Length: 300
Image (cartoon, rainbow, N blue to C red; front, side):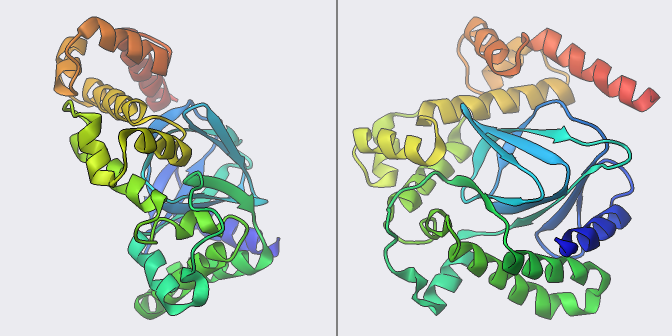
């Protein structure tokens, strides 16, 4: 698509170094990486992502999503993921954009159109990759162009963002996005459970408590939560705990035992086993490797 070339030039101009950068347009971010990256762990918030050069893989539990310039990627709820840039070179760096949104943004469109009818399926995975069409890419290109026209952003950015979300809603996987805003849908109820876990992942909670928040039975919560997120509520909580523990070990003066207790583990040995299972190495070795890799990057 010719729009890719225009966006590539804009992103290259606004990202001189590797990393992710906010733009002048609210909720729009640009990323650039000049080499294949190590797997990176984090929370994928509700957003639309488009790679204009290179390729990326996202792992959700055991499910892999691969996307490049012919696709777009959407997450409709907060999800703990592993992301990795898989195609990138100094000559042709990985370049991408991310547009964040909220359920309220989606609901506003549903209320203004006939799209608020009940979807064909009341449950879908909250993450998907779809083929990028010319109409959607045209809308995205006009939004990206606004970074060079700051005076136009307050008026035009909300309108174009609404157009982009509308294009996704009427596309192949639109129901998955629609469900987060439809009151009473299984996805919206799972979203309430996700929000509770995100706020309380360090403490122990009963499944009955979580099921009550989602207005489901315990068995229904397990089934629907896994359908939306590809993992059980306890697996979701575990990923949040381990990601936070890793952050503590990297950024604060703490040891593995202290980090384990801070994120809610009662057994340091269990923490070490689960940490190694997720990140590939026990805590001490993993952090040492990451710090050495960071030092090597600074010397390069």
